[in-house]
Image (cartoon, rainbow, N blue to C red; front, side, top):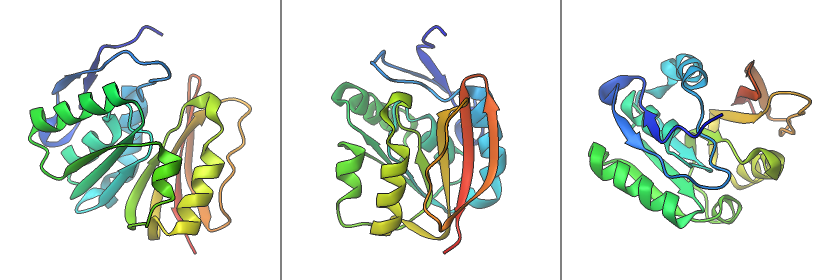
Length: 186
């Protein structure tokens, strides 16, 4: 797949806005088709929600959430150049309730937590970080009761390692991408 170079916000107040995406190793923008389905799933929960994206990359998930009515978003991105691009997007869109934090996601999760309504967990495919991050999210208290977790992983032959208090409520595969929505039930 060729690198897109542009990110298109597909719904909400910034619908149709295109933002530049830097080329960076491991950066894998969530495809439009997957985002459209995800945000159809999330629509009943977005108004006033607080969202955390632990591997923000292009910012597509949090910026889309903010565009569609989320109250605030926190985007965690390890790569300095990519984090700087996210800050530029925040300024370009006038996204007052968006925060960009340049930090490793695992290190971020080991800080004092603040509970979020929706967490996006979309690490690099070869990293095997979903299970470790899910464990830290649950143990540290990063997710509110009845909170939602979006997970993106390889679509074929991949088993999600989730805490027992998370229930998988939606799951699909698009090409090589498996995308899932879980709910915290405990």
